[in-house]
View 1 (tube, rainbow, N blue to C red):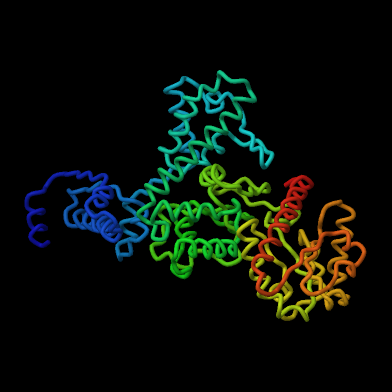
View 2: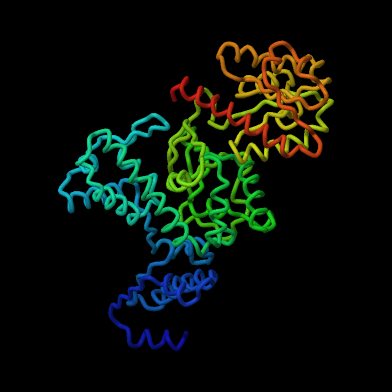
Length: 480
């Protein structure tokens, strides 16, 4: 290097600008499948450009590198180099102007609304009218290219030849179609494929996607899905991290608290936040959301439960309805005598429910902490739950505590005329000896022996049906 420095100082005495583009693509072609070479090559370019300028200020290098590579740059000069760099992250306003200008240039329409022939796009599931651009933007990968693909497809759809109602439906159909194709084929399987260690083939990706039951998931449901996925593809669950990869790529987001606004919002990771270590990036007890573009792909292939409480999108707020987050809760009512036998079954039930309709199980051993008022905590647990699952047995039917738990929800059931109590018999108790109100219900018969897994699956299916109805009632009855 000292020879090069001497030559540089002697012969380069006026301004020279060097422009380098598509270096990441060149590295990918030269070292296919070698992610370390891809990353380190770009990091080396950063250092070389900085060193050249430091040694001779006549030399200025303008180079583009991928933001994922930059996120792995650990160096003493990082802050100095960052000050000389520009992260290309157009804001939502920038992208809206870009699309608006393109629409005007090619169609003569003065706004996105005029171009679409609609002032709003109706979100039929959440029952709200959305801003046209925001609806398109949240279905995209956030890049100018992806948004231009939406504009091109909408232009080719000849929207203005349709009636108002048909036009609105056609707009949604076109956006869903393009987002489903772009997010998986262009974004996930092309732009992000090199970063996938677990989801490194189309067959594995398909196997995971068909297991996702909803567009809003719990941390526990991620674990259950991962366990079933790893079993299906034949890898150790400790070595499989498909949701870490989707989170790292911005296709699974997280509900986070914002101290400044004292509220919750949906966070989707940006490319420059890419985590190369990719360990412990998912939090316990968090709520996770699936990118709308990925949802558009999923609903074409599987039956998906869609959260009606919140519109999903990067930076969107996360609201609650009367303290309900949109994740249903099942209160487990049981006798303490039955607890040792029930615990393995409840673990199976939680797994099965996570694979059908993610929900939280309210269990006293988990929810009541040292120093808590037991009676008050139980009362609160019953109050906030969507269903009470009564594990009926000889001992639980004699328990005053258990009767108080399910009878509270019984009153709600009578008032609201919908199921709030589900009964599962776990011993030789006959349905005819149940309290009169409970005798009217079809009780699930749950063996805690060899057939436990099948019983847990059947019970999870029944619970998911009632939980869907409970959430629909919450949605209809309470405005945000």
